[in-house]
Image (tube, rainbow, N blue to C red; front, top):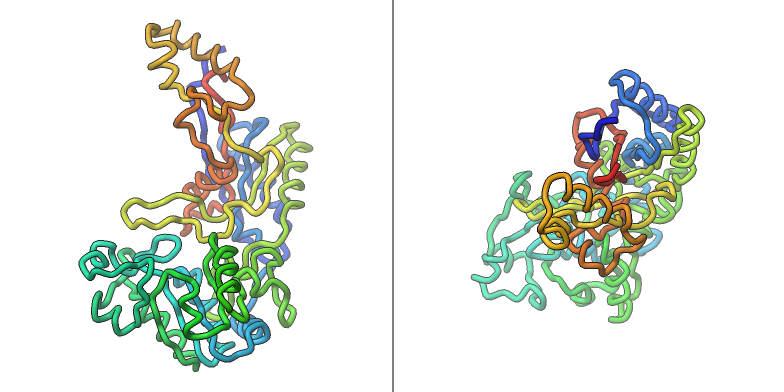
Length: 397
């Protein structure tokens, strides 16, 4: 048998448009097996079938309206003056949630982090902050001071001035608005003791700091729409986190519990092919764009559900370390053989071993989910399922 010449392959799998109530496990299984037959490849053990969270939520019918959000916000925070702090700057991710929040309040004090939001969308450059002699760790800026120092700052990629956009959106909902800029959560307590903290990955710390500093009510985004309102969808674990705009008045929430789905697809593939694949649901990947400085991960997790074979981190040796150090005097077939033997003999856990230095110490689901997010894209590719083959291969396979 000749050597295999290809390692990891990532394929976008075309699927029909998914609607509420569709049998997703059947559709995904048929789409993957149909693609394999049409394109002439075989399903193998430990292939990974990844399904974008968006079609899972759509099949679940997991939606709510801005009116539902408004009712939930009013019930939980009283409908008066509310601080809305540390939101990300996104028309798709947050603006529609902000509409619902504004409809449930009399006044919003919107506190934006600067120079950028949590995922790296820039409000003002660090160079401009340095020039102005501002300390972003301690200084609180009013809207007037921000405009005086920095003027209008449109987003590099979207051309939107989010400060004006969010302010106008709140006013259009019949809600008063005051905008301030600060990075210390407790700065909001000079304006109101009722707060919605909208940060994603730092939300537990922010809430703890606010409560310790004397806030009366603190509700994180994962606590809004965490139960149905008027028969709406909800997400018991993540609330509004991971949601997306569906229509002008509707939000598609992050999928609800979907471990059963991944297990069902795994079983269907096993029954039909005899191969044991891994299956996961994925949202945003976790990678940073060096040009715009945007860190992609606006979802609370990369993967809300996955089969057990995807638990853990890679256990890999660094080939170039072995080539440059342990086997520096070898080349050609002798080098290949020596490295192959090292891989076959590698420990089950390489943590702290020099020969694994420089390999990627991240969760498998974060790595594979990022690969899948880049493969499927966020536009019109029409491939909401991704098949990854050879991910668990190494040089010896």
